[in-house]
Length: 218
Image 1 (cartoon, one colour):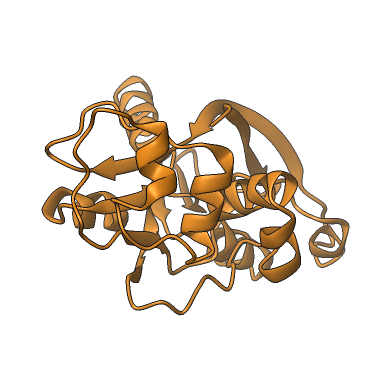
Image 2 (cartoon, helix red, strand yellow):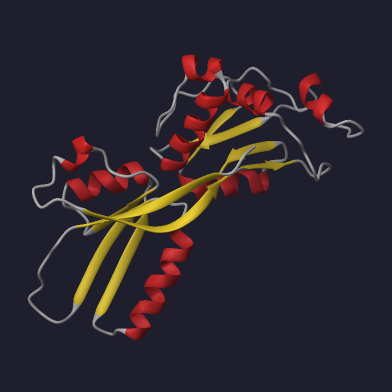
């Protein structure tokens, strides 16, 4: 799978405080939360008059909270649309902060170097390939004994910029995915029983850490 690079954006409003102490609240993407928490903690050590709180609620909810005025800034894997910006009388300043890579993670204790073609992983996320020992997976992994167990496909349950970026990639490489699912922050994934939903990136990682046979978008 080719690298899919994303730029995370900060949307911030202009505000005035009646004292020298500044307290900012933000929310949004869960993907970059670890680095933000480190930055904000380090900044608070350098400036005792500032505190920054950040809650990883997902890109979609973060933008909604920012539009509603519930937070001072939001973080998203995608820039705000013209329609979203139209709800903000003061406008918004969008600043690219970091770059990250959307990738797929699998949990098969007996397999350390799994190879999947674009066609195969697209069909996994369409629900068409449901077992690890499927002939098309085996073809790309000669000499490896793949288990005859279901593929637990873990996807995000919340509106996610990462989900949009990945589903957009699948829509570009797979006509069937483009016609049946399409690109979305909250795709309508297959209703196959082995498709499982997890809240935020951390939820997916936790699930795959305990499930052998897991396949996870992160």
